[in-house]
Image (cartoon, rainbow, N blue to C red; front, top):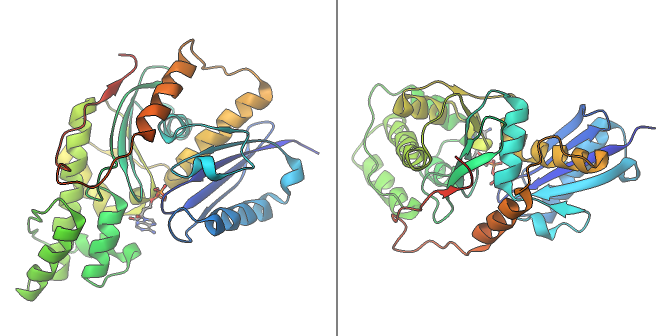
Length: 302
Ligand code: ADP
C-alpha cells in the first residue's frame, strides 16, 4: 500500500485538508465550514478527505498543518505559516505565478514570489475585517443575500455606490442607511465589492505588482470580488481550480518533502525566514482605532 501525506489548513473560517500519495498525486481534498477555528470543522474535513481517498490515518506517514489554528492540531508533525504554505500551494497550482493574493475569512495577504517561487515579500491585513471574507459575510447578511449569491447579484448592478466605512461594523450601518434610502441591493453590493478591491489594491501597492497574479482563498470563488479587483488592478487574475485549498496543498507538499527528506526548493535561510514569519504572525493584531494604519511590507529577498 502506498504511503500518504496530509496537509491541513486550519483556517479562521474553514478547515481544508489535502491528501497526496507518495508520488505527489492529489488523491483527495476537502473543505469544511463548521464555524470559527472549529475542531469539528477539521474532523469533518479529515473524514471527507479520507473517504475520497479510500484510506485511513494509518496510511498517513506525515502531517503538516498551517493556518490560523495550526498549533491546535496534535496530529501534525510540523506546523508551517500560512504565508509559506499559500506561496507553495499557489505556485504548484500556477507555476508561473509571481504574486499571490489570498483573501480568506479573517485576513488578506499579498505575497510576492521570486523566480523560483519562494516568498520574497509580503503584506498582510489581519487587523480588522475590512478587505476580508468576513466583511463580505457581514454585508451579505445586512442586505439579506446568500454569500454564494452576492457576487452574481453585485454584477447585475449598472452603477455602484461608495461604501466609505472601512470597518465592517460601521459599513454595516452605512449599508442599512443606503437600503433605507431605497438604493438597490445590487448597487450596494457592487460598492461593497469595490471597497474590498480598493483595500486589496492598497496591500498590492505595498508589495509591488508582479504579473502573473494568482488569487487564492475562499473569496476567489466570489465572481464580483474577482471582477472588481481585476478592474482596480487593471490586470487579469488567474483563479486556479482549488483556489481555496492552496494553503492545505502547500502544507501537503511540505509534508511530501519531509517524506522524501530533501526539499528541492529549500534555500539556506528558509528556517530563518520561517522563524521570522512565525514571530510576525504571533504578534497580536487587534481591531483598534488605528486600523487604517499602513503595515510595512516584510521583505526577505528581492
Ligand atoms: P480561512 O482560510 O480564513 O478560513 P477561506 O480562505 O476558506 O478562509 O475563505 C473564507 C471566505 O471565503 C468567507 O469569508 C467567504 O467570504 C468566502 N467564501 C467561501 N465560500 C464561498 C462561496 N461559495 N462563494 C463566495 N464566497 C465564498
